Length: 298
Image (tube, rainbow, N blue to C red; front, side, top):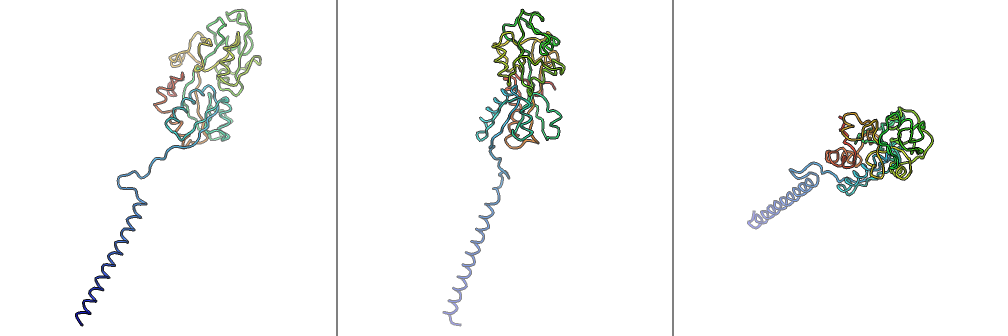
């Protein structure tokens, strides 16, 4: 073999070796890039929590509405891509809406009745709501016994002089049949007897407040977050409302506030209810809004 030929063959071999090295290097780089695309870097979480989005509808109890509205505002401040739409309509409306799937949350002053037992509703107790018997400020009494209040709401007592007041007609202001407030008063004051059909009916706590405050000789019932100095709040069986009175059982006019979902809540609905039940909201906001925390009576 000539020296020229040997030198030529050596060059070919070297070239082949170099080419194989380049190809091997390319194959190694491709494998590394693919791995970085499918695996998280070492030390990072396997999954990143996604930002909450969506719209949550909540309807029903007008008594609970002030709390739900404030919770919605606080929650949306923390979750900019979530919209909470709270509306009233009465507890009956809230229960029907959530059972039908019209609302994500049904707010109610009373527990869902037997007609909803097969609807898959899940109960979330969010607060205690004190209620009060209220009168127009021109009514010159400060207390009604349970018996007196029941007779007034049943239409058996029609003049304030019959309970120690002035000689003036009693004007009864009602809530609608679907109202949780009405059901509570019927249960706690009337022992489930029927209300008189005389008087004016209003469809919300706000409307009840406005009507009683503007109608001479009127009487109604409302949850205490709506009470202000435009109304007179009566003692019931000689006991004025205080949260201590509810705790020790001496003041008996209160309801348990429910937020119902159809099945276990998920996504933004779950996050909103969890927020209302959080220590942050329950320990401060609830009493600021004149409700009592869900665990108050436990």
